[in-house]
Image 1: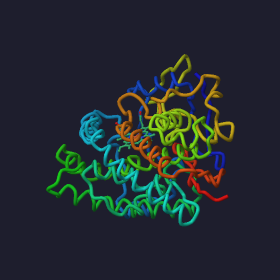
Image 2: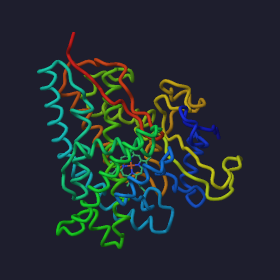
Image 3: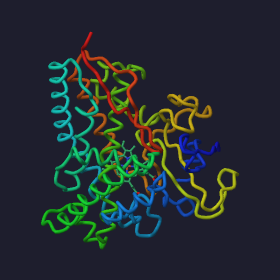
Image 4: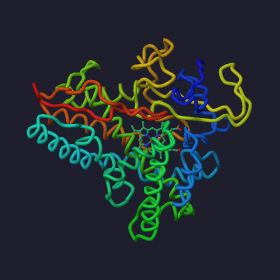
Length: 385
Ligand code: HEM
């Protein structure tokens, strides 16, 4: 086992034992009685009294329901949510995903024709995953621009290192999101149509818990996929992973590249666990309360990495993380894994097919780099000389 301590390079906050060895990571995920996900959704930067007041005013609360739930209620709630993402439902969604992908790629091509350049994050990666998620959950597709910006703000609030002013700004955004969500939950529970929130209420889950689950799922169920698509399109346009832009128009090559990105620099490169009692892992003692950062995939210049892109071959000489770990493992394994991969492959393949002969115009974009999320913020391509 290789372990290192990680703190924020800017503030020195947080202290995690970092596990990079895939076998140790998998073992932790498969010992939920000892390694709990109770810290999975905690704010990396403690919330100030002022930020807490803003959140409390919106009745914002994140009781453990799914991803951070280590109690016996987890299995039943997971079953309700899983019912909305069965392999059959995901497969049946493929034509819809392809239709959305073609529409987005065609409008990106029009932008290139009109202006010579397009940002593929906004034009292609941003909206289709959100539309597909809301449709699968039986929820109305509305307010997408707000949902996208609330998602990024909340990820930064909980997994970033904002200073006090920025944190307050993000807290206001999270409070707005939560108010919107609460209204959506109440409407959906009362709706005659089948939907996730109604199914949870019928299972006996109370409104604050449904809101907590909704807060996590409405972000995790689409922004992470947007980020995976963004990184894959960036690497494709860069041509740095052995697959050229024109080859990306083959579904097989697009799948190979998505899987490569999932193994080496996924949108969720790390996830957290906490030791519930004194125990031992691969011969190393672990103390009760120890916070553990699990490296699921490679990463793009994280605080505890050497800087720059972490070469997967350089992960302590052990090669890349098996791609399966990108979605976690064990009883909390991601319920959207199949959907996310399908969406990414279709979006990448259709984009490469529609935008022939484009090249990367900005090879050094700004990257979103949070404790557990990463992606280029823009992927600018075009046909400029
Ligand atoms: C590239 C996209 C995605 C990545 C990389 C990703 C990754 C992850 C990871 C690492 C976990 C924690 C697993 C663990 O603790 O063992 C997780 C949990 C989860 N993910 Fe995803 N995810 C993605 C997309 C999605 C989508 C599209 C959905 C649904 C629409 C989704 C729903 C969930 C749920 C519900 C959980 C909690 C499961 C539980 O605690 O039982 N995810 N995801």
